[in-house]
Image (cartoon, rainbow, N blue to C red; front, side):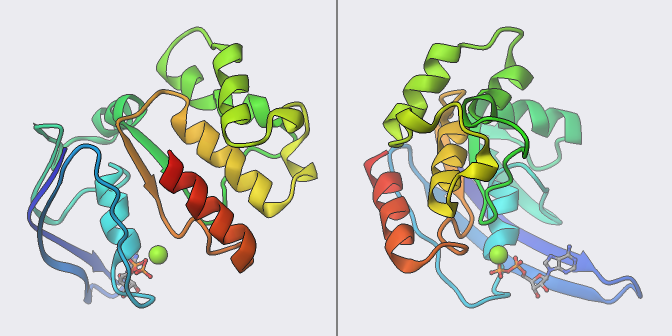
Length: 186
Ligand code: ADP
Ligand code: MG
C-alpha cells in the first residue's frame, strides 16, 4: 500500500539555511496494517505524514501509494489522489465553523463527485457515536465530538488509507483514549 524509498525532506529557512526533517526513510506498510509513529516534537512526524497524505512532496526519494509513484505529482494531481485514496485527521480538527456536523462530513464528497450521499454521511456519524448530533453546528460540540466528526469526514469517500496526525493532541487523556479506541476499531 505504502512504499517509501530513501525519502528525504529538507525545508529551506527564509535565509536559505536548510532544515533537515526526514533524512533517509525507507519503509513499507501493507494494506490492513495499523501503524503508530512516535517521536519527540520536531522529529519529523508531521513532515512524514504530510508526504504520506500527499499534502507535500519529498525533496528526494520515491513514494509509491498503491503502486503509483506520486513523488513528483503536481498540486492538482495530489489533490486527485487525496480525494480518491486518503482520509486525513488533524490535531486541530479543521472543521468548517458555522456549519453542521453532517455538512462537514459531506465535504470530501463535494470535491470527489457532483452528488452527495446524505444517508452515508449520517450513517458515518452514527458509526462514530454522533448520530444524535448530526444537525448541531460544530461549534456546539466538545473537542472529542469535533474529532469524531473529523474522523467521519475522513471516511466519507471510503479511502483505503486513513492518516491521523496527533489526533488526540488537543484532547484530555480520557477523551483521547476514546478517540484512539475508535480509530483502532475502524
Ligand atoms: P513533528 O511533527 O514530529 O513535531 P515536524 O515534521 O513538524 O515534526 O518538524 C520536523 C522539523 O522540520 C523541525 O525541525 C521543524 O522545525 C522543521 N519544519 C517543519 N515544517 C517546516 C517548514 N514549513 N519550514 C521549515 N522548517 C520546518
Ligand atoms: Mg507534528
